[in-house]
Length: 259
Ligand code: NDP
Image (tube, rainbow, N blue to C red; front, top):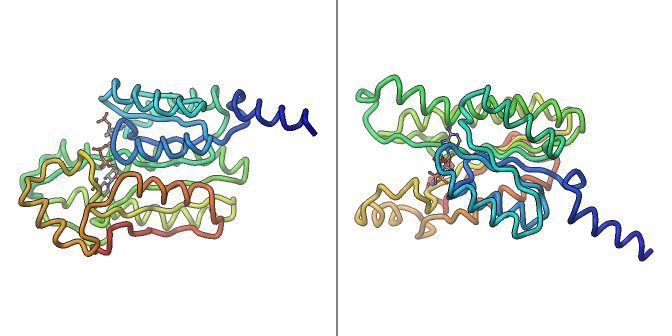
């Protein structure tokens, strides 16, 4: 009995192959960082990524490793399939397959559609939507083989109702919502669940462009009377990442009653 106990605790601390592995894209800050740290606290190996902010990604890695779990940090563009393939080569070497994929990386674009150029349109489609295709495509074969997997896409209330001056952003998030529902049907027979969290206004750097008056009027319209917090998104994502294998194809609103 005693020996068995020792062996379990050794495996949990020392052998990454014995733990579940989660990939969280866009984890240098904000919602992605909160999700990555939440899974680390729950003893997952955590793979994190971002495009520009190397120092901040390394800080996330340090925070994750303080929970005695393994962390792989990858700088690269999730909108580019070749770079995602490189990431998956490293994941396979270090951890085998993924149990949980969290497609979180995203950018916003504020402005009239008629003033948006094709480069900005392509960039937001690639970053927010093509990335979800790239990473799901690469994660699915391993998940199917093990007949277990959770794909969680971070969407937005604007994907449901649309926002003026955020047409491209709304289109990407609406695309994610339809992608989620369709892929859930395709993968349910393989024991894989696909869900999305449609966030309302969450207090991260993405909203720092708002001035004080804009922020007051935004909060005024939210029945909960405040912005959401990244750790509240992380709690819900973690729940979707390990519980309830009958819950799939859902776009779950997390917006304080806003929309
Ligand atoms: P932040 O701007 O704080 O963080 C975005 C993250 O995505 C950063 O880590 C950034 O990395 C990364 N990223 C951007 N482009 C790429 C790319 N091409 N490849 C890899 N990583 C990339 O945003 P939030 O934390 O607020 O948002 C996270 C998600 O939540 C997004 O999908 C967003 O649309 C969604 N959301 C947010 C809401 C909010 O109110 N905050 C509301 C609704 C949805 P880098 O540091 O390198 O730029």
